[in-house]
Amino acid sequence: MRMYITVLLRCLLYVSLALMVYDYVRIDMYFEMMGRGYIDEFSVYVSTWRGTFCLIVAILLVVINIIDFIVVKKNKHAHMKEYILTEYDVADERAVVVTGKAVRFAFVFILFYTFLLIGSYMFIPNYFLDYPWYPIFTTASIPVFGLIIYLVTFKYFHAK
Amino acid sequence: MLKNRVKELRARFNLTQGDLAEKTGVTRQTIVSLEKGSYTPSLLLAMNIAEVFGEPIEQIFYKEEETK
Image (cartoon, rainbow over all chains, first blue to last red; front, side):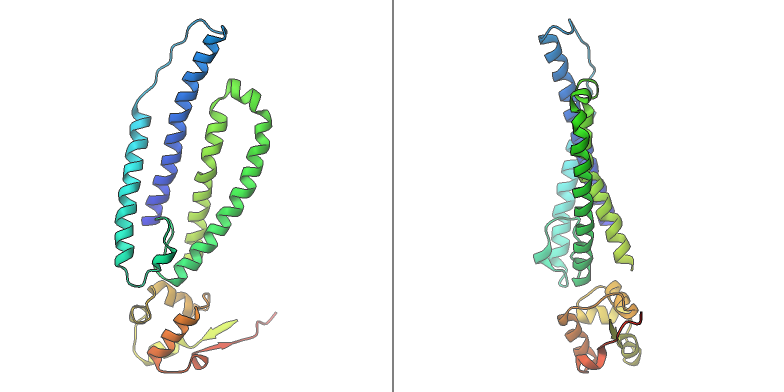
């Protein structure tokens, strides 16, 4: 359950950060277009909920990390030297082995996925004009999908 | 493939998986996997298990050739 929550929060953090950056880029693009004389004026509505949401998720993550660190430290069977992130299960030696295996799978996925994404940036001039969200959200999708692959692989091997 | 007699010995010593997990410093899930043969323990865990049952490691863990 702890892992589901932290992975979900970490994914939400990346998504909300991407949304915030997208808002900023969108407005910046309008100003740039206006500065170059492509448009005379523009109107845009920016809500503060994205920033608030990102902040809440970040605070929640920090709190969960601190609580988890204390709980793991109290567990005398836990392998503290393997502890880096809350997502890493260090409950015992098998959990560490399974975590390592899941991380390897996620890493392989990230390698191939990033390769495809970089390839897709060949079209960035088109995307950047019409779809400024594309590079932002595809970049955010790398850790998000990586985390999902990690979670699924970990649960699969842990249940075996 | 590494086989073991943990399930048999645990029954003989009247220990639950949770008891053995507690004594050897791992989670119950690890003992479950160990008994199923899907997890190969570290030398330290094998020694801890051997210590609990009071038998040499090689009497508990043994190699078995995989049949193709």
